[in-house]
Image 1: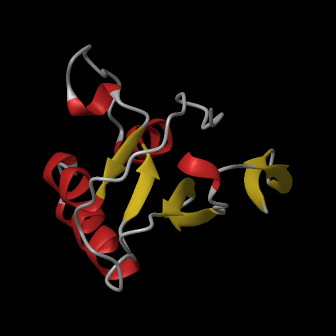
Image 2: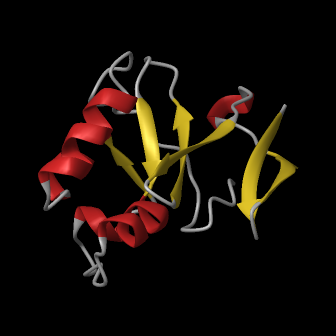
Length: 115
């Protein structure tokens, strides 16, 4: 299965794998003009890329040991750190069909290179 990265405005396909060999797909949603990558989890949750999220939210610091230092955020965490009502509402509306919290986190880095 292939996921997609948005590089310079173009979608670039790259293979990704889910823990335990399950296939997964990386999707992109846009908050204003900022692309935010996300994946669907096996428990019908969703994880968003923390690096993309922080860029869209204007968050510049991701302290070690903090949830924002992790490469993925579930929707509950993302809404908690949103800082503005518009972003929080967008998250809730965009991902309404998913469970807002998940315990399924893939092994990956900030750029979503999956192990």
